[in-house]
Image 1 (cartoon, protein in one colour):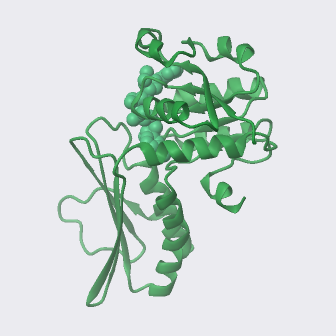
Image 2 (cartoon, rainbow, N blue to C red; image 1 turned 90 degrees about the vertical axis):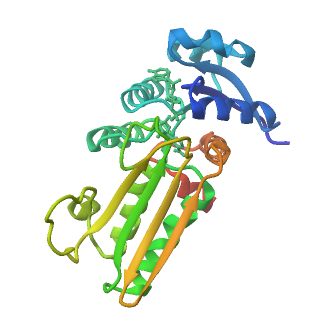
Amino acid sequence: MEARTEIIMIGAAGRMGRTICALAQSEDAFELVGAVDAPGKLEGLASLGCKLSAKLEDLLPLAPKAVLVDFTAPAASLENARIAGRHGRAIVIGTTGLNPEQNGELAELAKAAPVFWSANMSIGVNVLMRILPELAKALGPQYDLEMVEIHHRHKKDSPSGTALSLGEAIASARDWNLQDVRCSARDGLIGERPEREIGIQAIRGGDVVGVHTVYFLGPGERIEVSHQAHSRENFAQGALRAARWLNGQKPGRLYCMQDTFQA
Ligand code: NAD
């Protein structure tokens, strides 16, 4: 029997943190050994029955084999990746909204300790990531590429990290750089749509877990490919799958969900 993968959950009191903790505790393959969140939130985590702290570094010596799983906020995730690097520990990060400098630093840190980052850990979205460029190529340049994403009212970043990753995937099919062609605001007398453009629009409200719809708009027809997350559990499943995969991997480059499919 394979050994259990030990997990320290950072951001344990958050929406994703709570879901991942519950899943890890319900599955034999995992053991939740520690949970980290802001000092005022630790009391609410007592029922987890694992070691709690507001400081990741306090927990590391108590759980020398644990993989760190972080769903917090960009600056916090980066700081936790630095701590993981100093201690040679593997870290899975699901936080979105990192800027290019922060992404660059993660890639640097990944050379010294195993670091995994994915804006969306669901199987469905990651399969789409592979298939959408094929679809864009098969349809050809006459088809305009657009996307709409919907998320709950508490989401802080826009467009979503998933929309940006899907956007990069379809941009790559045209040999475009998403940063050069993305349009996320249309207002006023904006003129005709340029050919070299990918529109990504965001809707926010209610408790929507996540919807991403990619449109291929051509002459006389359109194709819509839509992914709808029904709950946070599929992201949590992906995060645990990533932690199990990352455990024992060598550092070298920033790993992502696609790597777990190739194993
Ligand atoms: P949330 O606001 O509900 O939870 C974040 C938690 O992190 C909070 O409890 C907060 O107190 C804690 N936190 C923040 N800074 C901290 C720090 N320095 N140390 C310890 N704890 C800290 O947010 P959420 O909905 O759980 O989402 C978290 C992140 O995950 C967001 O960036 C979101 O976009 C992303 N997300 C990713 C995926 C994915 O599949 N990769 C899926 C859903 C959400």
